[in-house]
Image (cartoon, rainbow, N blue to C red; front, side, top):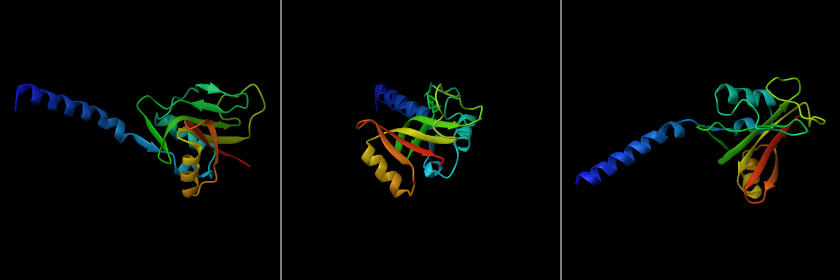
Length: 148
């Protein structure tokens, strides 16, 4: 083997080893999106374990807080990459209140990268009652649970 080939192989192995922690840190939200929980129980562990930024990147008028996944986190929901994590629980300091009427006392979910049809098929196959709605056609879909 020539020295340049050996150097190239060493570089490829080193780069691959650098990505290993990201792959090991993958976290699937499937079980929590069964809509049998509340926003605090969904969001608090993600903040504690640093899978999401504790400061919401956006707060809607209806008080739904959107949290950005951590830079080195790898969140998935039903096999789709998570773009944002959503939540609100009345009276909980994790969440900021919006300028309007809150959506409900407790709501949570995730925005994923995938078409609405594909996401809904996987959500239903898993037995979740979550609401599945299109955010951006063929690109972003929301999976949402709220207290009735």
